[in-house]
Image (cartoon, rainbow, N blue to C red; front, side):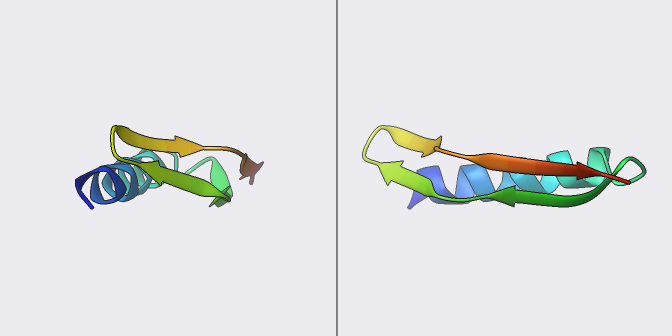
Length: 47
């Protein structure tokens, strides 16, 4: 659970930091493992 919360908070921070330049941010799928989480694919759409 900690790894999932960590990733969600980091993606949120990234979205806020890039809000002026990015219109969409998608991470799918996200695999959560006992030692952390791994984004297997991500998409960023610029404004």
